[in-house]
Amino acid sequence: MRVFLTGATGFIGAAIVPELINAGHQVLGFTRSDAGAKSLLAAGAQVHRGELDDLESLRSGAAASDGVIHTAFNHDFSKFAANCELDRRAIEVLGSALAGSDRPLVVTGGIGLIAPGRVATEDDLPPASSPFPRVSEQTAVSLAGVKASVMRLPQVHDPVKQGLVTFMIAVAREKGVSAYIGDGLNRWPAVHVLDAARLYRLALEKGSAGARYHAIAEEGVPLRQIAESIGRGLNVPVVSKPPEEASAHFGFLGFFVGADVPASSALTQQRLGWRPTISTGLIADLDRGPAFVA
Image (cartoon, rainbow, N blue to C red; front, side):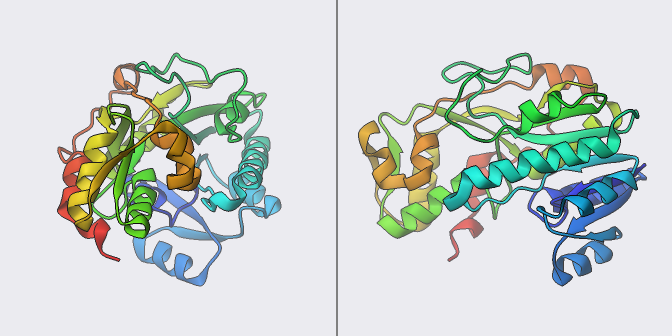
């Protein structure tokens, strides 16, 4: 299968490229830079140049492929709503190029607000109304005539990057303390990037239209444990902050740091035959130390 991969040089996309190639697929990687093109060629992929707001380039890349995986997203949180709108338009364009065919589209979504306070499953739907502006999942499943599925991601990690935890490290470095909210028993799920990459491939190869898949290895890591690991890594005190101080201390992260959002991948494992195989968990990767090098 010739696969058009957006975000091909990003943290997750760069792991998906060899996963696809090693399984016998061809990869057409979407990138905006010369450096990105060079890294894709070195990995054995083909290059498709363009920006995420270049809708015609997205359309032509999807049209020239047998399937699409969409991982690209602009993580500049100072213009988060605008970036979410750009993501919505990109998904619609990718879908328009695949409509009426059996070519799959795998879109990236989040696990965060699906079922706060209890273990979310793949059968849980996003809330009908939410202050969260990202609508990747809702856009994908609404595409008419498109075999679209959704990959819900938790905190995706390796020793160097750990999703939103990476931003927590930056806040702790700036403030001189590693903080959590309240008792810190609220939970974030997690998965190693290599396990996530393998699941993207399986969703592309075996996924069903309208399906939601959970890339979850650890159902819920307590935020206090995450904060304590950051404190060890940066050699700073670990403190609790009351909920009313979350936004002041964490900035945009305040919306997430107090959230209890555990999730299960039991149905994904059953439906796609996927099992997490990387034994290193989120805290173990954090404790290795590279993420704390400024």
